[in-house]
Image 1 (cartoon, rainbow over the protein chains, first blue to last red):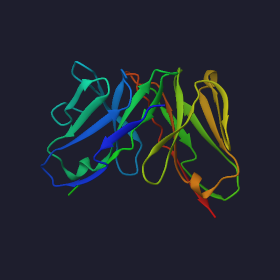
Image 2: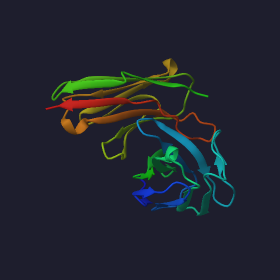
Image 3: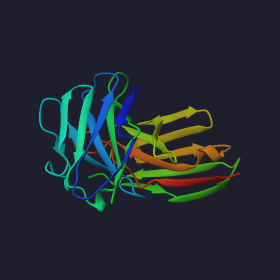
Image 4: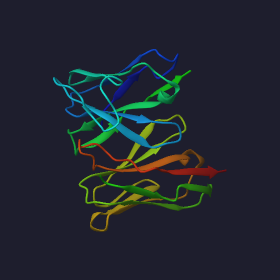
Length: 115
Length: 109
């Protein structure tokens, strides 16, 4: 199975600032996703991080607010820009593990609190 | 898009009891996964089960794709089973998983 790490694991930030979250996978993967989990809620897809091209965003999420980079097949970053308290959530990256049967695995998450 | 409904939303069990969690989905899918989110927020893969039945220790799962539902069975529950259980079929336009609202399980000693 995939081994996925995320940095930072948690952070407390002031409103108006930005935070970049890193996601590292131990093997090359094609599909990498970013999800958000607001307090007490389920997971919602933010975007798919595409290697070599712009990310594909879900309805309700925009590149200016959540810019994503995917420089290679093992790494991606998600930036949460101009933060407000409503951005307080857990942010998780996931990968599709095509080495077996397309099972998806999740990183440990980044717990963000915006004051 | 695909709709996912999980029941019950909350479940309280005494240690040692058995339980069944249900997941209904509104459209055909070719992939479905069950996850356990522990109190620290970590999502742990339980089953990849697009159809049929699988067992792993005290847990087992069954998906009946033609009838659009999946079941997760927990036997002889332990306090470490506490957390939120999510069902997630692969039904998003980007090949992503669509998550239900989860079942919050509390196992009391």
